[in-house]
Length: 130
Image 1: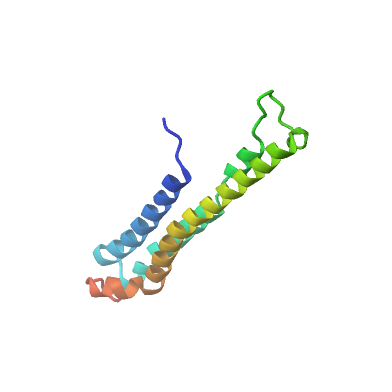
Image 2: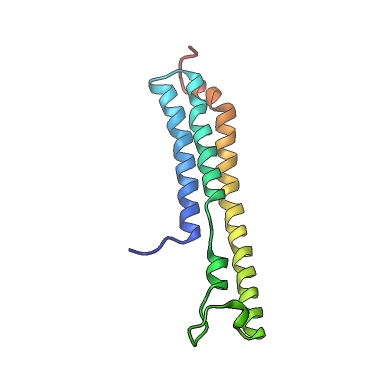
């Protein structure tokens, strides 16, 4: 089984958030009442937070790489090697933040809007008011 990349995980967060928003509104229209339309948005925001706070350990993995002779002590590595590892760690952090910003912005904004206005959308789609 292939290991999921950070992009794959964040895409899953986005899809789950949108799914939760849609499920809340659909539930309100088919079985509930208009006020139930916001529930999916609240769940979507929680999913977005979980995606935000989930550990990304790529930088730690880079810094904990073993040298060709099997040593793992960062301080024991030559200065050029340490600088190279620090550059790689910083680059991975920057890449991770770019990806997070793109996916988590969309999932949290869609969730927040549904949380705030899902009842109105459910009403427009025919959910009863009470």
